[in-house]
Length: 92
Image (cartoon, rainbow, N blue to C red; front, side, top):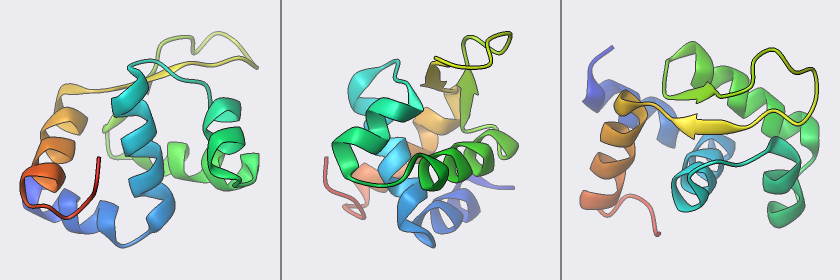
């Protein structure tokens, strides 16, 4: 999928935007921290994380763990986030 298509895909669902923004702002973050900060359920955040991982926009730094997983943006995720920000499609 092209970067422009990924930007549109991320924008289609607000939980994806939320997770991308939180991961970008915090460099490394746990799903529970995102849920707590946003008031969203952990299931909602976990779904977004799964979707973003499938499109290789974020990656887990601790895949061997069952809990306390930590996530970062991939290089592709950084490009998508920068495109969102430069196009003023999201607030940072």
